[in-house]
Image 1 (spheres, rainbow, N blue to C red):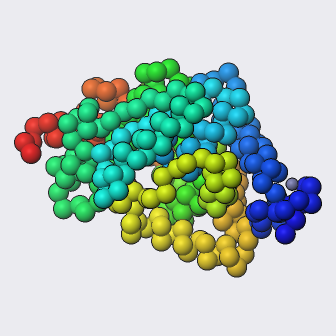
Image 2 (image 1 turned 45 degrees about the vertical axis):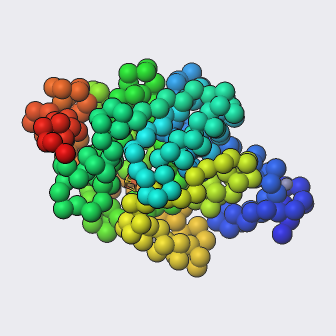
Length: 312
Ligand code: SF4
Ligand code: ZN
């Protein structure tokens, strides 16, 4: 296996691009790909301030690394969820995020749910969603709220997350199985700040395979948390990823094609914006100012009010 660019020892075979690269050329190739996606989808400019949502995993830390190397003004945001899972998942992910920020002299905002609300995410979920075994929907709501709020309050133009192609293809697959029109309309590399109270959200890694991100983090020497969140076990997104991996093995490039042709179809008008009823009926929550589709306070504020009113 020889690098196509220099004939040196190839370390990765990018089958979908029919490209074998050595370590140096792969580490060069990756930021170029990310830069291309940033430009193609008009994610942000070098003048804008970017807040990267950092979990301590390979994708978000590598994204932060790549954006900094590309010369963008990117700070990090770590949200401590208070999830233990036997390996002290949240503690370890914070340690790795802080370690990365320190080593590269970067600014990291940290927000600890337990300190702010006196409860961990699983505890909040238990109090507000009895009967649900996983705290994921509550966790997602809290993360979205905190990310958006921090970005707005600290004056960032855009919020970047480390979703890679495998993540996006799995979400797309799930939404397609359910023909979830509202979600399909919104899914894409960029979610514009087209309603008051939100910042633009972007996914610069959306065309990069998960295995390429793993290779990047390892070859770049980035120490990241290897364990998944303990609540991720059994998630349907993991099952969809496995199915798509089987497809990819037989047909290299299938995942990328699935995602990119979806974006093209959307651009051509396959899903009209009117399918996104939820987004059209949004207004500002009277308590926190973030958008909501229900009358009165948003789901986050109602949830936190319930948490406060209920003793443990
Ligand atoms: Fe939150 Fe873990 Fe569920 Fe992800 S898997 S949404 S981090 S609880
Ligand atoms: Zn090479």
